[in-house]
Amino acid sequence: MLDPTTKRTLPWLVAFAFFMQALDATILNTALPTMARDLGESPLRMQSVVVAYMLTVALLIPASGWLADRFGTRRVFIAAITLFSLGSVLCALSSRLPMLVAARVVQGMGGALLLPVGRLAILRSFPKAELIGALTFVTIPGLVGPLVGPTLGGWLVEVASWHWIFLINLPVGVAGIVASLRFMPDIRGAGSRFDWGGFVLFSSGLVMVSMGLQGFGEHALSAALSLLLVSGGLASMLGYWLHAARTPRPLFSLDLFKIPTFSIGLAGNLFSRLGSGAMPFLMPLFLQVGLGIPPAQAGMTMIPTVLGAMLCKLFAESTIKRFGYRRVLVSNTLALGSMMAGFSLVGQGTPHGVIVALLGVFGVVNSLQFTAMNTLTLGDLGDIHASSGNSLLSVVMQLSMSLGVAAAGALLAAFAGPATATGSGIVLQAFRGTFVCMGLLSALAATIFFQLGRAEAPAGKPAVVDEG
Image (cartoon, rainbow, N blue to C red):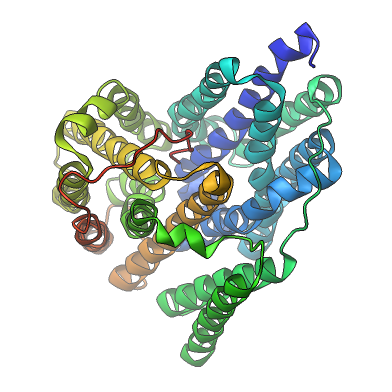
């Protein structure tokens, strides 16, 4: 049992960590053009900074529960904050793009453990009657971080330097470590055996496929090496599938895919987020490099997207209940893709108020998409598969967004060629072509959701998953 002070403080501590992670995920995007200039890179080729973090998070999420069971929630949570803070320092000290990418990997190692371990501590510390309230409180900073991040990032690069978007994590990290030593309970699980063989096969497959596809898109690797990486990655994924079929307790049970709503929801998440997951990276770049808007103003322009997402929470559930999952997801996926492609019509002569309104509507549509996809995916999972299914969905979300960012960066580079001048016609056309391609990519996911029955819906109410 927790003492009253710890019981009151623990949700604040986990919420604090969630805010730290959510803020970092959004504060960086607005600063990318300034960072590119200081590092001597093209702002249209900075996607590796974002992809490195997302891919690292995707790889380590499956191991987070086992690490907490093996070493205790307090020790792992403190280690996560330490790694995140250390990675932040290394990011601020980076003078070249490869150094920054490596530092983001370190930061991602901490970020991957922060929220899963914090949420696990909540789940094991609070009775069921108080659990929903505690988890809901923890998720609120996940909405506040994206609201503050873009504006703060733009403001910091104007009044100070881009290094401060990482250095502000230090005092937060120190405070988090001190608070964790006092208030994070040291909970250990039963210590079940971890599927290391499956983890190695699954993780290496993800890394090789991601690196190969990024090599094809950015021409950073030779075509032969890129093809070899993709082939090796697919072979590793096939190896995992065969391994999971023969292992009593695999990393992700193949029985999950016998649940129709889970299979459709997971596949829809993967392809839908390829487009929409790239927007937090693509839009701040477009506003600054394509339209010539200053960083702070570009950050503030992104606020309506978050406000629209918050507004959607008020009616998302009732909308899904009224019209059904198939109708909502098919129509909303097409609307989401159309809106993304529609940003190709925005130019330097477009009134700022119109851009703000479009971003607000996009936030509503995007949030409805995430809510419907996640509840569809998790709603039919029983107690046996709930943890594994939630973990796999989180991995797919991060993987899809990292691939989406890589795809958007590759399209920008292909359309723009050597042009990088802010506001130039070639750069603007490159963004327009990228918006159309990413919109079409997202819209294709409607064919997956069309496989749902007219009245098909999950039988249960799922646990909340981050919508990231």
